[in-house]
Structures are given as structure tokens and as C-alpha cells.
Figure 1 (cartoon, protein in one colour):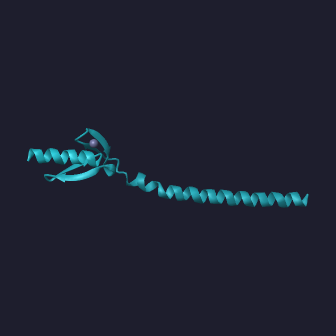
Figure 2 (tube, rainbow, N blue to C red):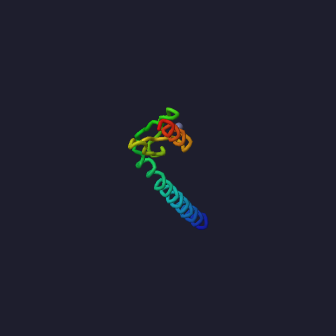
Figure 3 (cartoon, rainbow, N blue to C red):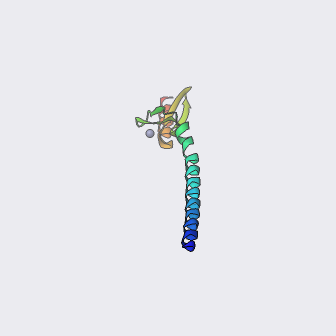
Length: 88
Ligand SMILES: [Zn+2]
């Protein structure tokens, strides 16, 4: 009977350790995640090249003729810069 009690206590300690480490891992993962969510201004910008709306923090920014432009990819940025060049 005493052995069984000791076994239960050991199992309880192990269980506490496991949940402690699991909580530790989870809180670490949450520490890593929030910045992306918090820093996300929620502002959407338009890529004029492919008419796509995307989060400002994910967009490529370029100042063209003193105007701030946003692009979904370097490919779109290149297209826009080429169009500007052709225009003069
Ligand atoms: Zn684009």
C-alpha cells in the first residue's frame, strides 16, 4: 500500500514536471508569436502593378518621384520601375 502511495506521488511529480515544461514551451512560443500580431498595423496597401492588396509590413516599399509605392514582390517593383523609366 505504501509503495502504491509512493508511486502515486512520483507519478504526480512527473506529471507536474511535464506540464511545467509544456507551459514553458508554450509561453516561449507565444513570446515569439505576438510581435508579428502586435506590430501588424493592419494597414493594407495596394500594389499598383498587379492590383493586389497586402499588409503594409509585408510589402516592398519604393519611393518613385517622391511618391511612396508598395509592391507585393520585387518582380512587381521591377515592372513599375521599368514603366517609370519608359515614361521618362
Ligand atoms: Zn504585385
